[in-house]
Length: 104
Image (cartoon, rainbow, N blue to C red; front, side, top):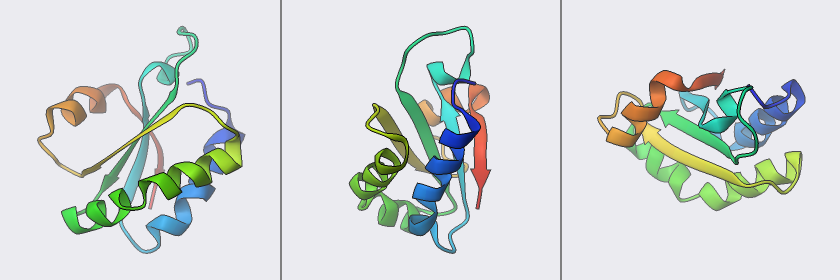
């Protein structure tokens, strides 16, 4: 995985205030999962327990990204949000190769 423990910690600290008491899981997917690959943006998947919480956080997505960038520096970050156990084809495609960074 091509994120340092410090970067992971800072990403989690940035997301924490938005999660509050929600049940959620933060995952890393894409090229940063593999040590063999180079470059690439930070692809994050935030899985939430229900659609209501997903909608709440989707409305704050730009604030979440700004908080992450404030903590780790200005990097290209993609943040996808979805309900846990979704049948979204994209989520189903990336889930098996993703890495859990944190559970709330």
